[in-house]
Length: 214
Image 1 (cartoon, one colour):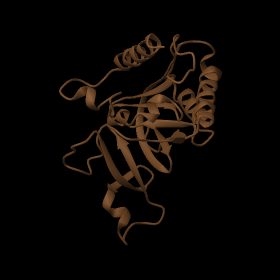
Image 2: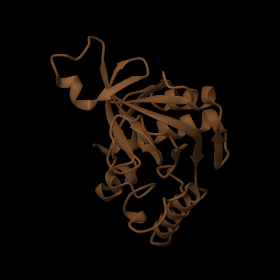
Image 3: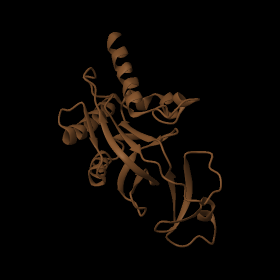
């Protein structure tokens, strides 16, 4: 990734933040229509953002829409559909971050009951085949000759939070951040889920530390 492209993605990302939050360092949206409006603005230009999953890994956000499930949204992450119940969407910026590369959006999820397709769940999500709107079956059905036309694979997230950073940001360029440390990952090895406030403090400390070395 070239320096010019990295800087361009950071500018784009911060332009989105400015459009929806003006000059505020923090903003929050709770109404579904507002959440979807901001998310779709983030994903409007491909490859300018990167969304990190609650328990590790990440993909670019392409679009978002209301789900067939009441109270839920669908996040299209490079063609992979993720269903989640939204609690709130937050925007976080930092006064000491002159480049704006540490600006991020955090999508906090409300608890979502398991579908009941699997008797036991090891992870905070379930991969399913959506046979018809809101009707699920096992993931393996999607690879079966018996899979109905129009069925699709979806991932339902039962808890956690996504964070979205600019594609060219240091956070996105750091492979260690793919461990889900913002929500359900390494920072929670034997502790509770990382809260929105705890993660903001973590990033604030990073910004402060980097500034002290310059």
